[in-house]
Length: 267
Length: 267
Image (tube, rainbow over all chains, first blue to last red; front, side, top):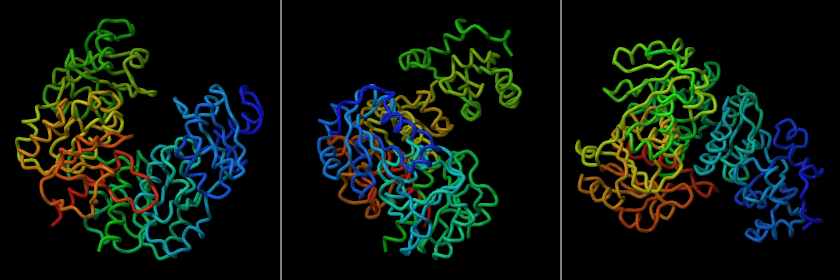
């Protein structure tokens, strides 16, 4: 534990963490907040990613293993009062544990260097909860990378980090690539680029999915714009067998990614 | 349009609608609120389900087709001030259109009467957004019914209705059936009952999915309790190919339901 308990929400250390709730300050400091034991546990698995840890007295007891692990790695651990934690937390019921982490994303070239077979691309996705859930589904489906194009939400947004349930720390994440450049590089890396959109002529049931594939997922409300669809090798829709108009973004992404994963992995 | 614009949030008509935000009053009145143009459109497709419609002046213009349709069906339409709509709405940015609907659920026997091939069961699901998203996914996958067991969230909860994106009005929904009774009836209707849970020995890739199937999905945080798993013919897990600990409930349900739908429909 470093120093005495932080009780003043105007203390410089608290303000320096608090400002990371804003994207512009995250980009300036190249740091973000990871909240809750699950995110902290996954962050601590990566060398040098966790820069500071805040813990309430209660969380320090409940998650003594994580606090010990942080201290063993030389991470400064600050005890914070409930009021300070509430100030830093972006949730209604703070879990008492919050880390400041250094950025973990990688350049597009690095993400595509190892002969990827399954990649998820988020183009114009604006809802952080949806984006985080797609990251988690991509991780579960064994994807090799997740690419956020330049018009998408920031994966370091607190809600996105939470929805990813640790997956932000599991697989290579790329940020801010213009979609045309991303598609060009994905094709150059030998991936077939499929745009998931209700406008697709063929459905998931009719497309060959055994080749290395990059899936592009678009905005919750209006899908993928025409210029993005045109960049893909093919536009593919998830078949709707009932009366629903569409699936929500994260469930559609999970269905597409798992369909590819299954065909690629199960003989 | 019936009468003059409602501007008083304490008017009896407004209070009678407002109380439907609470489950106990919904059950007493056998009515619920459906908010937004999408839900209202789907409600109006069913005979006699829409009992009253509230519309702001702006929404009345923007959704003139829906208002006309309601009036043609003899549904009383009340013009509401922005303040009254904000009082009735359960969203941060009300869309200006809100219907009072009669209950649409059916008895379990009715839902299972037509030789169902795919059914989704929600056992102990507590988050209304997740439950609504599962309904939407079940509808998209062409499921024949959705069963909410007695320990699950109320599908008439406003957040659940919204997340279902109209699907609550599309397929037979059953409410409040004890899980043991539901499983018994599902088996009697010739369905294989699969419990989706990380504790499953076999994965989705290893199970025969071409038979008529009922999937049981459990709580977000702790999955399905042992006694529910024991009722199923088999416990099946979604394979995790990457490092994620699990999938979120709605994405896992979508992956399972689509895996069944595909095998059942694509030769």
